[in-house]
Image (tube, rainbow, N blue to C red; front, top):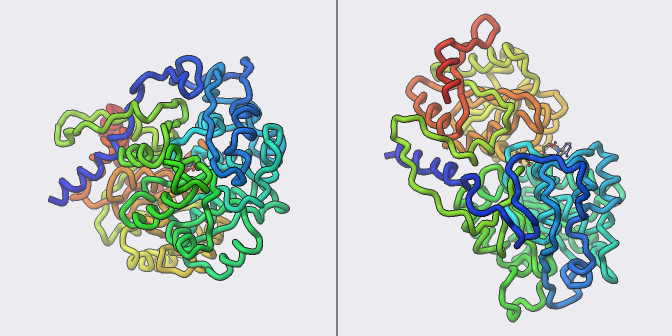
Length: 527
Ligand SMILES: Nc1ncnc2c1ncn2[C@@H]1O[C@H](COP(=O)(O)OP(=O)(O)OP(=O)(O)O)[C@@H](O)[C@H]1O
């Protein structure tokens, strides 16, 4: 039945890595002693700069760019005090001084937990999956190690003779599932690089002018490209995008990229960007060995499997934990029909920011927009993202809100590239208060001010719920998520509540206030 199908699809979320599996003594990957799960300040410790020894970088190939035919990626085995799970500054993480200065200039002074864990691990050349909750700063967690190896802000101390000023061709490929997300990543690169260097990054998104992109690749010769799977693989197949010398392949929102929709394009990208670590030297002798970086707030076992087959000894990096992938076993079947309260998997809890508040409200279909509007007023929300499943109905909701004097706009894939970016810009600058959208915006979209997410239609499963919800409460901010459902849909909300391990509290919006019933309060506190 469709209900069973829904349950099965959501089991993925639970299948993710259970905490404390396998030994955390990782001398293999350079960590000296057991890594404690709780974040530990290391301010009083001298932490050796990680990943910067001249022995392992520069002189041994990979970091000398594409000139050497058989670039070999050397993983650092040297011992360090401990992983700085909550570093006090970026300088503790082994990033070059020039890069740290740029970060400070842009107002980034303290790394987030996931950045503290991921940056040193990537600097030590490991293939990684980065998993931590939405809005926790995963973009910089991979962007900074890349910029410390490529381009003007790179670490020059550990280099050999010549490296990475953009002459070596494409050195990093970042793939994202939507144009908006790809453009956002480009802007983050540009922010750190500064105006004078922003040309070393080029966007390759679908829907944009392909000829201009081709010219850019030929004339400007960027070192980093960021794009969507279709356009990247198209340009690669046409021989215009040459990625044999690529040292970094990043798959942002990897679980989405590995979905059926992107299968063929992703296959081409994984096959043609750099050389897989450990792959036989013969057919790909001219390729540089690449480092594979996979990123998402939700990591189903299918991603673990993909990382094992496309990467080499990959490591799962979470905010406070680093685990070799080989210790992760496939999910056990979960009995979701059991009446006893399901124990949420640690992993699913970790996909959501801890400060978020989750509510649901029951309304008839024809009253959903009215409930939405009253909720916005009750919470005095300023930046609201509303999710729906059916693109054709977005317009109707926008129309109803506007009729009541609330500035709203629709955002979906059928709009042209220009229309999409204009709408997004208007939402970000506050001209539009309510952005009515579909799954397109659920992944990665970063509008830090977003204070309310509303599901007018239910998300298909708890993974989708987590990504939608994660558009608010970014980087420790407050945020509210409201799911408006009809009575018969309530069981779906209850199920997601169990799977995600969060209270989704029943509320009513009356007389301009969002009220929680007493009964619900006790129910949700028992979760
Ligand atoms: N160290 C930091 N200090 C201050 N702000 C930061 C830091 N790191 C990231 N940010 C900001 O936090 C916000 C969220 O970061 P980012 O978009 O990378 O989150 P994410 O974990 O990738 O989320 P999602 O899973 O939704 O894609 C961004 O606005 C980013 O600029």
